[in-house]
Image 1 (cartoon, rainbow, N blue to C red):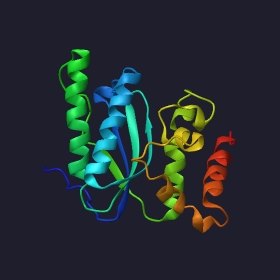
Image 2: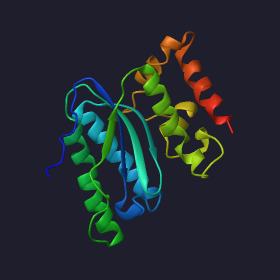
Image 3: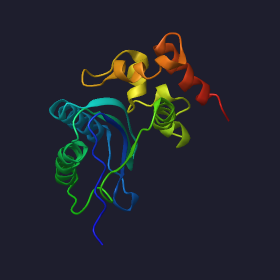
Length: 184
């Protein structure tokens, strides 16, 4: 049975995630994470994407990507193919790095985007890697809070989706994330 074609939508916002093959580690060390983020930045620029959020874990990753053109599949191939090849060379491994093609879910509305953003930035907290989202160095949230987001991040675009909450959208975003952090 052939695979279902992926939903490609100009102007779509996609939560994208991918796991290592057999849940193996895809980021062995910080150098791997730096290399992945460098490649992500290049792909974001080349594909004219808006990267709204990311979180790199040990055996998986999350992205929140807006695609002005219907090119998510091509961009993910540009991101994961070369990363996997270089990963295998660096670590003297062979075979698949990723367990399967990436998965993605299209955001339906602002509320869906809020919940997904919250899920992405809280991933390391739920995994017990840190106590608060701004403590995980491999998350866009940490860089947003510190004011050190890379140029290829679309933090202003992300914050614009919190305008409908009223008041300053940056404060609404931070309040929303903080409120979820304090939940048991």
